[in-house]
Image 1 (cartoon, rainbow, N blue to C red):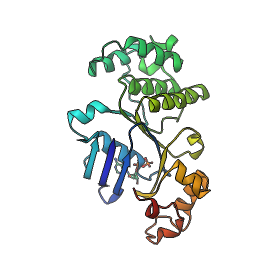
Image 2: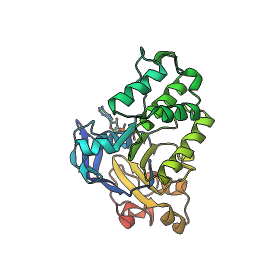
Image 3: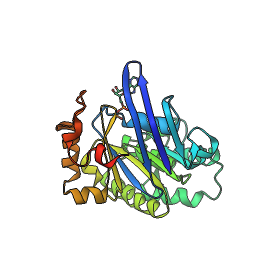
Image 4: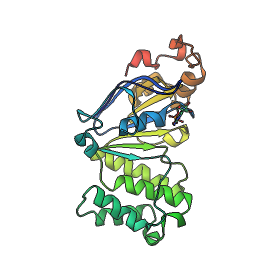
Length: 254
Ligand code: ADP
């Protein structure tokens, strides 16, 4: 459903993403893990079409910057960018018009209910707390019902109720065939249904494994994370990364 093929993104001399390749199956949840600065946001922004890069990205077989791909793609950015002069409700209307959605009101009410924004609908963007802004940010990304959804650090700033709702939504959307890529630097937040995890460090993929592969290996996700980011397989120009363990990228490919 989503294919990233040999994508390299440089900011001046900084190589934020170094020859990344991976594929996401339809109706799957993939967790993109990595320490701060690993390149997670950069690959997300490349997929959504915000950045120029070398390599190829396709969504549902369409190059990512085409209209066909854009119709399938949704993105929930790390930092909400709300309009101070629009109310919570008007933000949703704005998205509905931009995507030419019909019959969205029920969905809007359901999302507001789930993220406890029903009584905040008349508040303006700049009257919302950080957590409320993030909840609205998520509702805006979910309203069009994208087939492929990218979520950049979605749990940051959310209260426990919203985190629970978001995890439930992941499961529901997965059942409906949505493909999700969820980035985080907090391993503890990954205690949810996920099918594949991709671990990045210093702009490269250090592991790309399915849940079954990890279970067979017997290591926890946390162990794998530290083995590939701090163990023998750590980046820092150490290309002899094979000792990171059997679940390193070499064995499981992309
Ligand atoms: P992550 O999301 O994993 O924390 P990022 O993709 O934000 O990582 O950053 C990857 C690398 O690219 C870091 O070294 C970061 O400093 C650099 N970087 C990100 N955005 C920019 C930018 N706009 N200009 C210059 N360097 C950037």
